[in-house]
Length: 161
Image 1: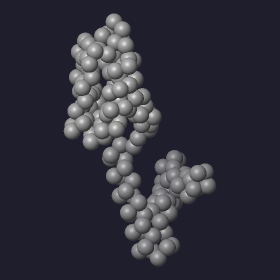
Image 2: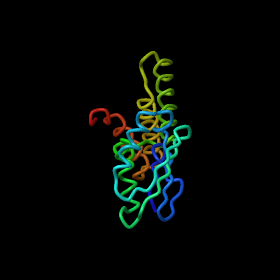
Image 3: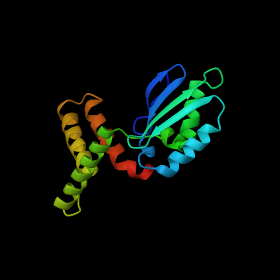
């Protein structure tokens, strides 16, 4: 089974000698489409290549005795200049959204405190407060000490970067 790279190139359908791919880089990109078609025609084992630049679809008919499907897929990635993009580490949409939310909270806390606090310092302070409180009430480790350790790690994180 061929691996899709979400947001870069997807394998829509594969059967023996026929591969359909979907990618946005070919949408309305006549220059890249022509370069891709010219390069594909030069490969042995390629019977026919059809590109629909309106929807970014590629349909390749090929001889599996001459060209293996996974090798063909790698060739397509290379010819479309997607090889680096496909293997690049990406953040998930939820992670990006949470990062934006925390950045907004950080800026709000910074502005409301007139520059005295930021989100990390506020959370560290809360951990210190509850850590000391738990150590005083129940001097059992690691609960209070854990909160103090988290506060220390949050505050010292900027030094490690």
